[in-house]
Image (cartoon, rainbow, N blue to C red; front, top):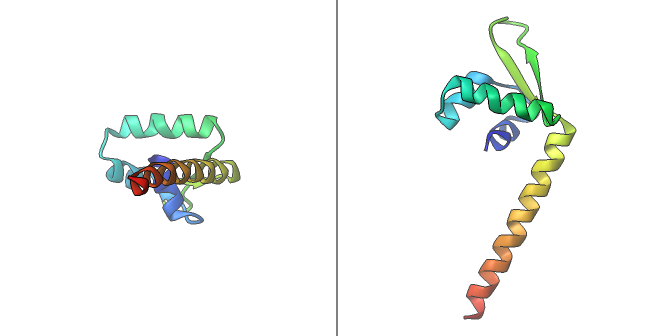
Amino acid sequence: MVLKIIFKQHPNPISVGVINSKITCKKSNTSRIIDKLEQKEYVYRVVCPFDNRQIDIFLTIRGIQILEEITLFVQNEMQKKTHCLKQN
């Protein structure tokens, strides 16, 4: 879900605060999720040049690729399920 939120802003950055407001969980949880995404090299952080307190999050090419793979997988699964419904 967090990757999808970041993707919607791509190629523009999104702040941790904005991500946090969209997923409505504790800021510490959001930071932990972003830490894990960064470890997997799906995102990277940059200190905002206009406000040193704000951290901007960007998608990496690898992050875009994994999102495309997930999207394709979900579409294929949905197509299989709806195909079964159409036959009945």
